[in-house]
Image (tube, rainbow, N blue to C red; front, side):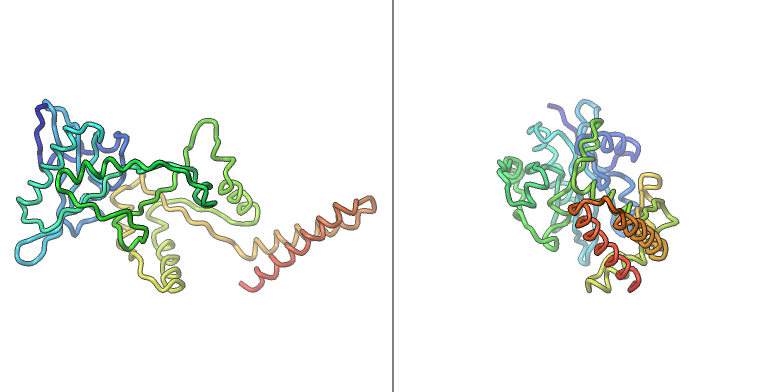
Length: 291
């Protein structure tokens, strides 16, 4: 095949390909270059007879002595089953890195090793055939595999990605997580969604998390860049509890329950259930009073 490599193509052309591809990820969009403004960025691409068939956003961090590091977050994006195209792109990326005196080029393409229900993993009932043939293809092009690490500190991006398939039959509504979410809403949890107007509120939560977990996370400028770069495609979601309102609602539920307990025709089984619920509600009120 007649392939041509270009190290910088237009943002519109790059995004038109990257955002509609089966391997699409927000890391491989021109908007990510604005988030990573402290890095140099290259929107590379491969053409086959003047048609764009592969892209890869490559970030470059310059170091002293005129050398640099390069990183392709979740890239490249292409048909990984097209071995000829894959080999060509991997070779060209190596030559591209050498051109800029890069001491290391790191890539972590969005390739699934396996897919399985989360409940199976949580219950240690996995029976999965892992597909690692892609690792061998990269090794043949002299790329070094760092291994299937499990610690977040050892990888650039999380290796495990939870997915909820929003299908028309709404099967996701049968999941435990969805049902627990509905319970939370009934118990006074509120949800607010927005953009730039919620950044400071989000940062306040992050600071609390840092203090509680004794870790360092992103500062507010990072999230402001995210919102600015992705605009309407960036959604901040915050869940919270209005303690006074929640306490009032719980007290009302307890009063209603106590009325039911006075019903003369109440069966013993139902009475036991109401008493159990009474204890739960009283404990909830106590916790809310302590907040």
